[in-house]
Image (cartoon, rainbow, N blue to C red; front, side, top):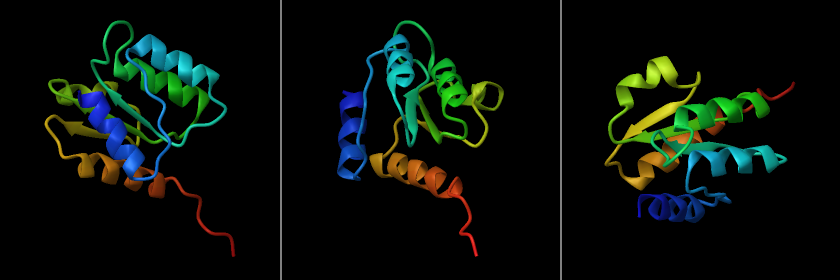
Length: 115
């Protein structure tokens, strides 16, 4: 249910969404993708790799990729396990918070205009 709600909120905000039921499926989609604009991952994403590992894997392929972690219990581990320049949302959260966190990270990585 949480995943469906997140997907719906992101699509309503204009994002095209790829979704995965677990860490292994997420890593597979990352490996097959030509480009990604951002990553939203639950820390405990089901069986297999945790969200921390999914984000690190994505950052190897897509340097600087905006990452938003969501969690019900692992927020304290973010500073040790999260990728730099990411955000974390503690469940429960309002979907607008997620969309805002992702949008803020996307704006932060935009290259400065050339004069």
